[in-house]
Length: 157
Image 1 (cartoon, rainbow, N blue to C red):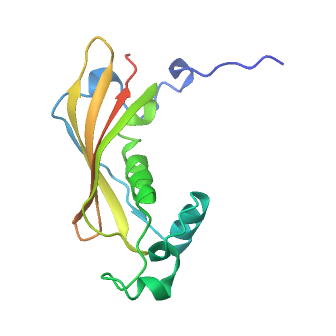
Image 2: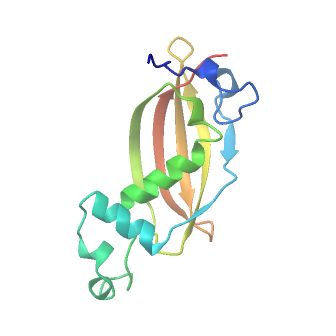
């Protein structure tokens, strides 16, 4: 049985997941609609999958004696959730992810926190289709807990 390689043209015409290069104008700002509450299970599983056994992430007794007095959500999970929240509006159609840069964890994230995301298109290169985006993760109180830039190649219509 021969497999068909899926291309952007195979998606339904009405699909609204991600955007084309022409729709990603420099300066355009997105407040991504969905939020995601992080559970203890999410954090523990992610920590174990990435073999991060630092006690501030997996040991409640240890973490209780730190400056935050509770376990912290592991940073790469925060990055993953924020990037995931941006996909429906921005990168869902991307052909290639090129770079994540200037990642800054600007505040703690705890079990039970809900993350939201917003993004701004910083630059786009006509010739290559490369789009540079700055995304920020905010908690339920509107505090910025993550900022980062990422580049991807967006398809053209």
